[in-house]
Image 1 (cartoon, rainbow, N blue to C red):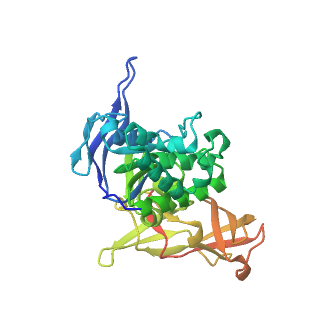
Image 2 (image 1 turned 90 degrees about the horizontal axis):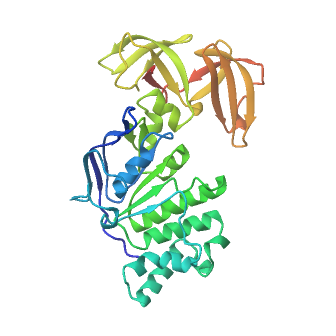
Image 3 (image 1 turned 180 degrees about the vertical axis):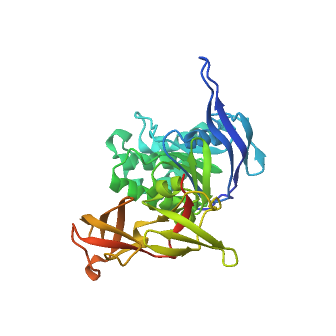
Length: 367
């Protein structure tokens, strides 16, 4: 299938303020959103409920108009244009299929509206049903399909009109865990095969990490960090981002000095003095700081040998790994032990000590 030329999406200082008519304060749903989705990229807006991610998507689609700022698709300013002339297509959380039409008729609906010749419609419908692996179910009504199959129909219906930009608003949240996993792979495969620019909204960090070229983390209407999945996971800019995109432990750290020549902070954590080369820009002397460590960047050693002492509270066997929960003076810490058959596993109630992988930890301001 021939790829359509991809276009970028640009938000330039975009804000959305919902006016309150009952004498209460206005609601700032999105504040000064600045980002670019490069042509052919899949970018995910990630954040908790109420963070402004869906409002941002709706402004790109044209369902909401910005209070301030500009939205460009390619080089065209679409800020005030209605949805039907923006060359975007949206896949919603609720599939929105027509129950009285077959799968084939649902997928063909957008082409029929465009007055395309019947022979061309049939050819394209066959192509896109093949793309989502539904060619054998084309004559069924949506009510006879599983949730994952219905989502594939909704995806094909949006893609068949060949939009410049595909917008997906939590499309997998109604599916069970296994179907979500399968559909994540399908969406990524289809997006890459078509080379289409896509913006995806979710509160699920696993979806964001597995699908995206770039992740935009939002909270309270503001963008907190933009980066690749690995950048967001390994080098979060704050405790909020670190905790939202993955499991993390935070250890109070006492700053001692900054070695400017080496760009290293020297700090004390528990029983040890550490040199930390990864830190956020807002870390400075006199402010509370913490060491952020992912569960897989920690290991257990005998009591007194590591940086922080504790007691094994619980071991959870997961086959490929064991999750060990440690009680420490600063709270509970989760440690992931990969390939447990080759490692020493401390029993519940054991006194242990926590050691860091110094290449993986990060110094953050204690918000």
